[in-house]
Length: 105
Image (cartoon, rainbow, N blue to C red; front, top):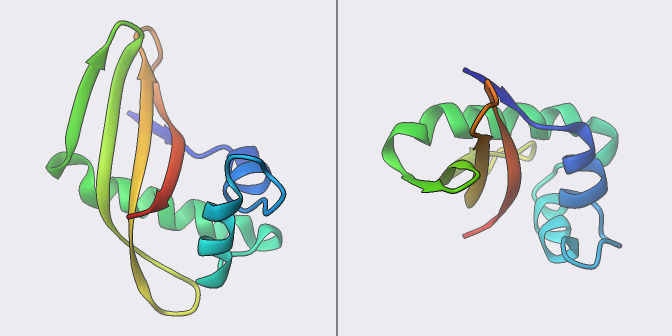
């Protein structure tokens, strides 16, 4: 199944220090070396996080589809491994999963 991390989810939310809901996440991820102008590095880290932890974490069936809640480490551009929680969602009729959010854990 295809797994998607939308550019806007990274650039306008997870790495946006002005976002009303995401600024604390942005400061955390930026502190560990992720940057808006190199958003693909963050995308790759999140996809690797999903691949590594998808089978060992919680799945929740909702009326709208399947939610994955994953906890595990990601590699950061500054060489550290940091523990995060990420949430992914697959709508009932969709043939792909996409990132909903990620935050320090």
